[in-house]
Image 1 (spheres, rainbow, N blue to C red):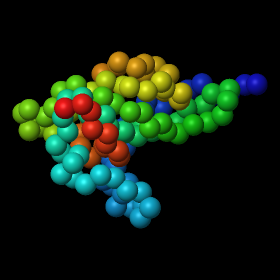
Image 2: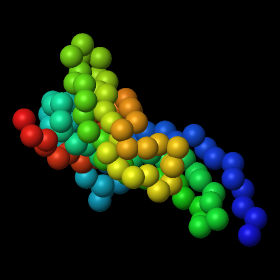
Image 3: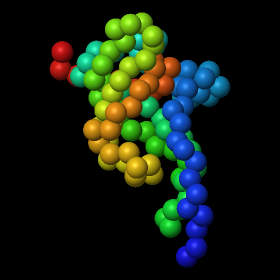
Amino acid sequence: MIYNNKHEQPTLVNAEERAENSPNFEIPNLEDRASLHEGDFVQVILEGVRHTPHGTFGGERPWVRVTEVDQYETGVYVGEINSDMFVYTEFKPGDEIDFCSHHVISIMQGDQ
């Protein structure tokens, strides 16, 4: 089988915009998304087309463990990927990722 192995670089999806435009897509409230703590787990969406021998994929929803909170009020958090990646295999568990509260689609509180 021949397939196109060219990839789009995955980008983080703005969950707030997605929720505004999709009535069935719910995200945690802003207060919760903006007050994350180190050790919390958040889920984000990565999107970008991938063509593989198994099909074409457009997104993945990894869990990320928060490692640095927004101490300078810039709106940016730092975390580590905490999921095995199926589509974006260049990312591995433990890889660092920066994200903002508007990227968060789900939250699991860590041990405080």
